[in-house]
Image 1 (spheres, rainbow, N blue to C red):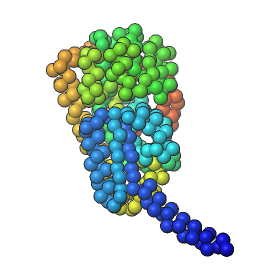
Image 2 (cartoon, helix red, strand yellow; image 1 turned 120 degrees about the horizontal axis):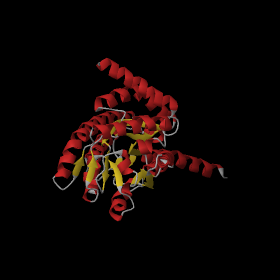
Image 3 (cartoon, helix red, strand yellow; image 1 turned 90 degrees about the vertical axis):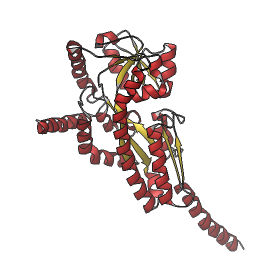
Image 4 (tube, rainbow, N blue to C red; image 1 turned 135 degrees about the vertical axis):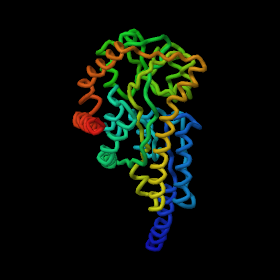
Length: 336
């Protein structure tokens, strides 16, 4: 008596579940803290169009900008619970997935050029991507966003000049905050989206930022001084969850890979170009660029050397920290 009903339910289930699976396949929701209509946003939209075309009918691609889905740590959390399928993030968020990625961004004054960064990243890329895959994430493309400079309300040239100032610090990096406090600095943990309001209200006096972000967010309107040192690069990547990746068609995967590589190259090229362009644009609107003299630069380099032992094993895993220095020494030896 119940057998026909069970067969009917089984048949319905076999029809419904594949359709549900396909509906999940056809959606990629990508989040980032990058500004809307920025070069990063535009690159993501182009990538999404390439993926949708290859993935086929019904595929949907959505980009959330301006931190509308939260800071980078929150974006990672949302990916893990399935609310998002991907994120374009800097090391700040990526290290919540795989801590070794911090080696590319959290070593101040180590890299002297973009060529050095590209060389070290290329050497470490395969191993890094394998670690992300082991954690359930697929790296689609690598990008960067320029050099971090210090934007402040008052002029500052040496490390000592910043001791009395309140620094923006990423809320998801307690290790960084502890190191800063131990050296006599005052970190204020915040999310990127809170930076402009924080500096306008006096919650912070100093914002470490790339020139592009400072221009796009109008931070320089309040923080009218920029220290002209390349403190560290902002390195990032676009990642998607392995679950979303595995659900794609082979054509969709191939298109996303190719579009991700293309987007990464475009982001890197444009971001590097816009470092100087952004500084020039801000200078025309009242920004003062402060360049440390040789003695002050020696003080900055001494501070960096003092930081490395504290960073190794705390902010950057010891083995990855050591690997970066091995590759960097090899690159510089080859250049000589």
